[in-house]
Amino acid sequence: MATPTAGANGSQAKNGHTKNFGATFSPGFTVNVNANRTNTGMPVQQGGHGGGQSRAEHLLPAPEFTSPAQVRNYCNSLRAAAVTLSIEVAMGAEILKGVLAAVPDPEGRPFGSRVRAAKVARKMNKAADELRSAAKNAAACYATFQQEFEEEINRVRHRARKPQQPVINWAQQ
Image 1 (cartoon, rainbow, N blue to C red):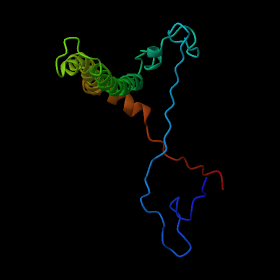
Image 2: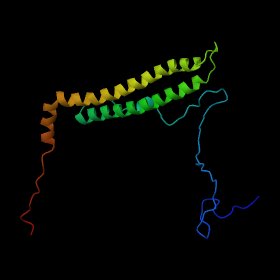
Image 3: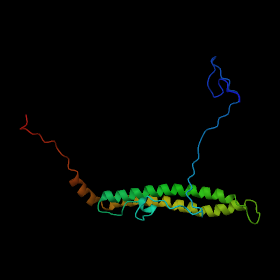
C-alpha cells in the first residue's frame, strides 16, 4: 500500500501548491437504525411510560381548566403536538408513496404503480392537512377564549399584578 503524498488529503505542500488534482468530495455520514423486533417480527414493547399510559397521553397536559394559564398551556401544547405530527405524517406519506411506487403493477400498465401509490398517499396527506388544521384551531381556540372572557381576565389580571412600590424604612439610618 502506497503512502499518501503531501496534499492528498487537501493539505498544502511545503512550496504552497496543492498536489490534489481530481480529488473528490464524499461527506461522511452515518445512518442508525434501531429495530427492536422479536423473532416473530413483532415490535418489542418498550417500558418507561409506566402505569399503562400510552404515548399519546404524554403529548398533552391534563385537561384541567381552572385558570387562564392552564387554558393557554393546553392550547399551546395541542398546537405544538399537531404541528409536529402533521410534519411527521406528511413525511410518512412521501415515504409510503415512494415505497408503493416501487411495487410492480399487476396489469403491467406504465406508471400504474405510481398512480396507485399516489391514491394511497393522498389519504395520508389529507391526514397531515387535518393535523395542520387542528393546530390552527387550537391557536384560534385560545384567541377566542381571550376575546370572550376578556372582562374576567382583565379583572383578575389587575388584581394579581399590582405594582409593588418600594417601601422606605425611615427608621433605618
